[in-house]
Image (tube, rainbow, N blue to C red; front, side):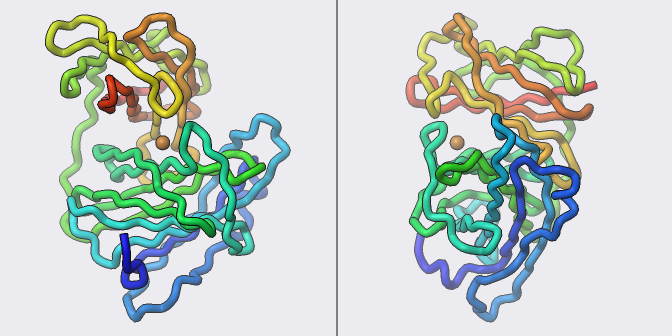
Length: 292
Ligand SMILES: [Cu+2]
């Protein structure tokens, strides 16, 4: 990862406030572009988001913004360096972050159609700057969801957008099959209720079997400090912070089952990506669900 000076095309500033109220939503987004001019065409997009509060104490109103710098020309399926700078609302770099779930930043990259998913961990370079590489498999729009926790503040989520030029892929269909095989692992998703209803607490169970013999797996290990990881996104024409759910595994006695409790805020189609560590190999199991 070098020569970031020559990369610069899309710089997007987002403004997210934890504990956001309807009045905060209509406030001025802090959008500014302080990247050095390089003579490249600059595509500055601005996107105002609305963060749902995750603060358990409800009094923290830390405001941060994330600025994204990616290559001017993105070639599909080639690793692209990505830089994310975290600043306060005045544009001053935030220097100190707390680790949560073992990392300083969790970054989710998804394509607009939610077919592509990548969960990566940018490296902290100091002075608010995080660096990582990701691929964008084909042309179209992508959303980057950056999850981090400034020191002494609540967890923050910033949503960033990347557009990969070219012929957009044909729309894919949504598959509601809840038993699928991912490499060596057969995963079936079950719920403690017949119908998923918006606003209702639900327990989701990922049952993991060896694909070879259908036996419950015995080699599950912690992943990022938990029994499993689960990211949920609501299908949307323009993903925002409100479409993102990060669920935590709950206690489950079965060694081959990982359970999560969550609520789907709105009716609609959601995609779930459960991630599990089988003896050092990460299995990503994705499913669609319909919420009434
Ligand atoms: Cu992560």
